[in-house]
Image (cartoon, rainbow, N blue to C red; front, side, top):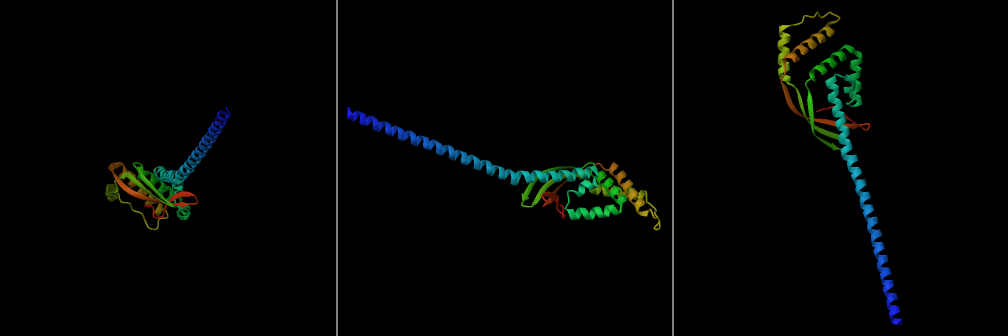
Length: 209
């Protein structure tokens, strides 16, 4: 009888130890799984932060660039360039509002038919390269048509005319408008757009493309 009681006690102790060990193992596995999940979330967040977010920001700059050209918006266009480049251009436009107005009109006209597709974006630190396929009006045909129309309708401006610069700009704009109406051919071109990070913002490199 005493042996039976002793055996039962031993078995109970063994079962208790097994139960404790099983509980410890489950707790360890739970902690291990939690650590692995936490690391996965952390590294996943870092990957998104270092890869996806910069590419999204670069894409935003590219979109602003093409939208500004299509709208002929000089002020918005300058925002996607480095501050020193934008300041220099702004200084020139401030001295000649007519030149700014003419540039805006030409920009808008030249990009009426422009479309683009970003094929890839590669970000390395504070620099990025975007491979883009542009579809624009065929520049060679446009230039040929511009020269043809200018030859047919030459302009005569006297050198001492105080409005000479304004008249010349208006003449060129009118010829360009007429040429664009007659040129419908477009051309695809692959370009590499270079961007740099300035003040936590992606801007187009002075070298551009």
